[in-house]
Length: 175
Image (cartoon, rainbow, N blue to C red):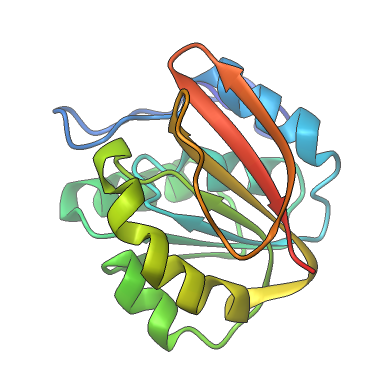
């Protein structure tokens, strides 16, 4: 995998080995940022961060800050290594379960990336509906990656849904 845009374009990033992390492909990341447009100066929350590809891409493209939330200690170490190697500022890594993190988070974000293990989408519906709206800045966007054909539910307005191979991107806008 590589950073596909911004100041670190072309830099290689790696996903932890094993089946617990399913990195978002370069092609899908490129599609996400084409949908979002400029992220310059944005505050980003990368939930289920895995390798950190989405948050790293946002920082490379000029996001002011990014918080990476991941529970797997190996993935957390990999995100920290990527941040050190790429010399990206404004980043923080939180080793935490996502619903628990959201329940106590007080900051607000302009962009939220949600890329949970596909089998968790249904079990996340209630915790996300309860806690996610509270951390969204006015006019925020939420990009939710699921398996193709899965329609995630959030108490937000759907801007678009696009299929990319076996993945589906649903972009929500905060009210």
